[in-house]
Image (cartoon, one colour):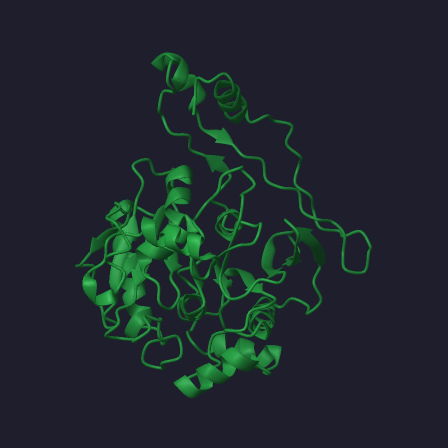
Length: 393
């Protein structure tokens, strides 16, 4: 990260008090996140921040996003663009925040036995936040997801393991598998070396975390190949853990490059992707940013928020099934009558990408294909034409 980009990132952050040393660098900028102080039991002493767009989609989804060490809910949202995605696609956003009184580096305590058990500590606090937000906004219980970076990614693994009945899917960025550490010494060793546990041993760690024995959440794993903070071997261990839970083979069923980075995929007999893994080439520790498939840019570069030519937030939202419909804002462009603008700002389906059908061995896969859409994104075509004509910015 260049100094210029870091200063630009800090410039966008909400104003902080003088005790954290950033107050003079970060002018006041409104954040879409709203704090809720009363949400139920809070044994982990976490803060609750959320964003609910004015227009929620039918049967709205909820995405829980967990920041990394040294970050706040607001800074990670700014860096990753999750609230922008929530506004665009009509889902609710929950962003728990760690407090320095719990962890001096504001890391979620993903290795502390008192915080990673079902019904206890930080895991239970996050579960209470989910229950409060889901009840208030009538969230579809089948569409609750979790993602996070680094310690937040490891805590996302905790939530998937301890509350697999709550989540439909999760995404772990530069994180660690559940259960590989129960103290700080183990945590540091796992971060430096990864885990040598076998797939069944890793799977048992999750199976023993709850009484759940039904369908397991889907999972998306992201890791930079040049990560020197959390060893990339941890991504392999997370994949092994969840392949064992889903009863899938160790060899990927499909391998392909997405935006220049390798992606491996495993699916079930119905052709549904259950596990995917992205290796971000030459990227150090952080969340990868880039231009999304819808030509939007979500997030701002900063510490542990790295331009890599691929938008992890967008791809994760797509993996969660949240980008199937784009909810266009009802704002009339300059010089366009309101009645004509309403015809432009309709909800338009976004065609799903066709799955890769080549296996690692080069043979054609028997994975069912989705029908290719021949539709045209009329809204985008019109918007580009209006922009070219100088009628829209």
